[in-house]
Amino acid sequence: MSGAHVISAYVGEDITLNCSVDSHIPAENIEEVSWRKMDGEILVLLYEHGEVQTDSSHERYMDRVELFSAEERNKGNFSLRLKDVRTDDKGLYTCSAFSGTFSDNTTVEVQQLGKSLF
Image (tube, rainbow, N blue to C red; front, side, top):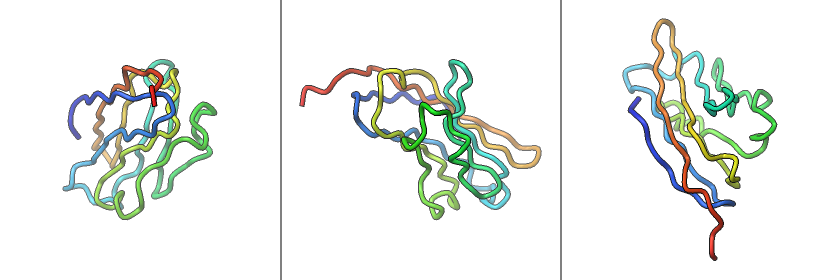
């Protein structure tokens, strides 16, 4: 995984928060990947034991978040799609991956939220 990224978005847009697990770790060995919003440690989305656990998402993110396809996840791509961005989505998000004794994380900041003029 790599360091912090910054994303600018307008209210109502769909955005992608990037997260890639190192390619030397086979996808089947990844036990858990979690996306959390840092203020309040809010669980945005959880991937555990090969399945996306949509019921575990905080109500603020229900039906607004998804991971990429299983094919992409098999390549280590655990990027998060956040739909219909709201002003309270602004802030720091962390993607954390766990595989046995290995763990890693990356941070994405969503900023400059405003209303589109179009």
